[in-house]
Length: 373
Image 1 (tube, one colour):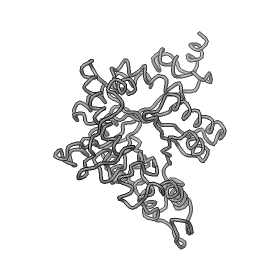
Image 2 (spheres, rainbow, N blue to C red):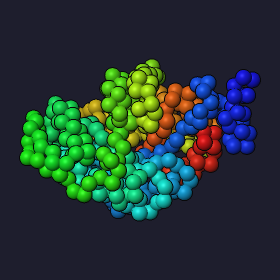
Image 3 (cartoon, rainbow, N blue to C red):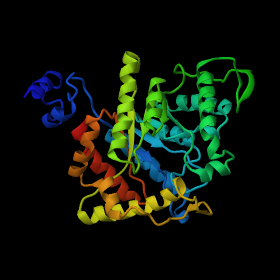
Image 4 (cartoon, helix red, strand yellow):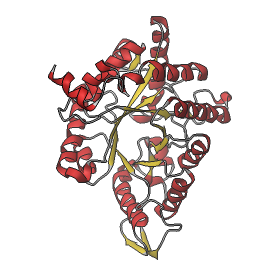
């Protein structure tokens, strides 16, 4: 009853459903509004080349337009080259396209692979993309995950971390300062100033893609937003990731109040047991391709990732993923609100028919989001 009374003081009945307010508004005891926001990952899955890249990207744009209309917080745009999984070689261009067709969505790169870019060029592209997206761009950055594409783009996986670290430092300097010169391991240049200058001081917010708990802590202490995922890791790993973020944010005090933690998950809203089984099987096939390129041998045939057998069973996958009815989805998502996760990034794109995917997004907005908003 104490929690209920506190909620009435900060969230008058009628503002949000009472049961949701009890569970989500004041679990910290400080009566602050703490809602979970949701984003759609526009993964551009392209298992069949005959479908056509134009149709794939129109499907992604349709999802963005729908997400904007339904009240989602953001959409996420990947960057991957040379392969048909998470296929998007031009994330900033796509961000601008999305902005032209939407009104309020944030548009987050998830992620821009910094070692593949020259920061002297990329910094200017970021500034222009931020202008063209009307300040809705969030710049998610990472070092690259697929050895197949990184090696073929001339960046050995053994160099991705030091290249990323220096690239990030160069990018931040170019976005924050004028007449920047550099003498490092990967960049050496005389003083220069990128033009135009950022409209927002320092450019768009930077979101660090990182899974290691210690990396999450250090990145948060540097003032970066965080995007993470446990992938097939244990629930304990997720708890450690969140704890690292929370500890760093608390140590920052008021300087860290604006920072956010986003968690990426594969998801789909289903309407029956048979529908759920079909989507789990589609997800299992998707991971057969994803595992090949992410942790496997990277066998690719003319741009198409070869699906490989998986050790994880369909039953184990079903238990670990957010593929379920709306009611089950609410219960599976509720712990994320209690764990101080600000945004859940939902990947609905794993080889399912385009219209079915749009319908699942509608179901999520209609029957799941109201429990958290």
